[in-house]
Length: 426
Image (cartoon, rainbow, N blue to C red):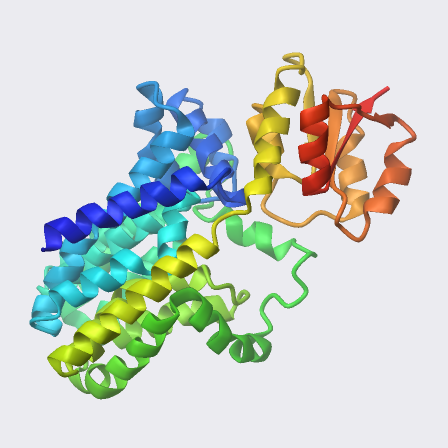
C-alpha cells in the first residue's frame, strides 16, 4: 500500500508540474544556481542569497543534459514520494497503525504538492528532516546531526532539527550538534573560497537591508497572522495536527513539540507566509495521523477521504495561472534577440531567467530601484508588470532612454492579457 501511495505521490506532483506554465519566482533562482553549478561556476552560484543545497542536488542532472524544468520537477516529485517511507517509519513508533493514514495525508496535501510542481526546495528539505527525525527517535545522534546539516544546506531552519532533539534529550543528544557545526562552517568556508566572505547565510544580511517588508520582525502582528497562515499551509491536516497534539502529542514528551516550536519561532521573527510554515511539516503530519488513528475505522476512512478531496482540489485550484505562460514565451523571445554582452531587467524575474540571464534578487522593487537597474548601457530591454501601482511613474521615467517595444501579434496579446509591458533602449 505504501509503495502505491508513494507512486501516486510522485505522479500527482508531476501532473501538477505539467499543468504549471512556469516555476515560482524562487524556483527560477534555484534553477539558475543549478545551471551555474553544473557549469562548475561555483562563484556565481554562491553569489546568490539562497542556500545552495537544493541547487547542488539538481546540478548533476543538468550536467547530464536534462532540461532544468524537467529535472527540477522530477527531482522534487521523487523526493516527495521517497518521504513516504521515513514518515511511515516514524508513525510505526509514534502511532502504530497510522502508516497508511500519514502517507495519504502527505500525498494529497495541497501546498506541499505545489512546492514540487513550482520547483521549490521543500521536497528535498523535508525528506532530510524526515530521515533526521527518524534517526532521532532511534537515538542515533550522529545521523541526526548529519541530516540536520544536509537540511541546513537546503534551508537554514534545518539546523533546528538537531537543536530540538538536544532540548528534548539534553546531553545525551549533544553530539548531534557537531555535524551541524561542521556543515555550517563548511558552507561558510566554501563561500569564502569563492570570494563572498565567511558567511554561511547571506540571506540574513540580505533581509536586514530590505525595505519592501515593513512588517518584518513584528512578532505581535505575526502572532495574529499565524493561525491564518497555518490553515493556508496545511488546511484540514493542520486542524487534525492540533487535535493529535492535544490528545496524544503533548503527553508523550517527544521532540516534536520542540521541532514545531522552534520552526514557528523563526517564522515569527521574520514574516508569516504559508510556505515558511511548511518547515515543520514532518511532526505536523505525524500528529495529524495520530488524530486519525484515534477515530473509529469508519470515521478514519471518511476523514482521510475528505482530506484527500480537499487537498487534491486545493492543489489543482491553486495552480499557477495559465496566463503566466506569457512570461516564459516573452523571455524566450527576448533572449533570442539579446547579444552576448546585453541583458534585460525589470520586475519579472521569470522573464529574465527564460531570456537566459541571472534572475532578479528575491524582493519587490520600487520604481526608483528599477530605473537604477535599467541605467547601465548593457541593459537593452526592461520588462515591467503594468498592474503595479507605480507603473505610470515607471513608464514616465523609462521613456527618457527607452521606447515601448512592439511585439509580434500573438505575443503582444498574451503580454497584454498578463499585464506586461516591454521597453527597448533607443
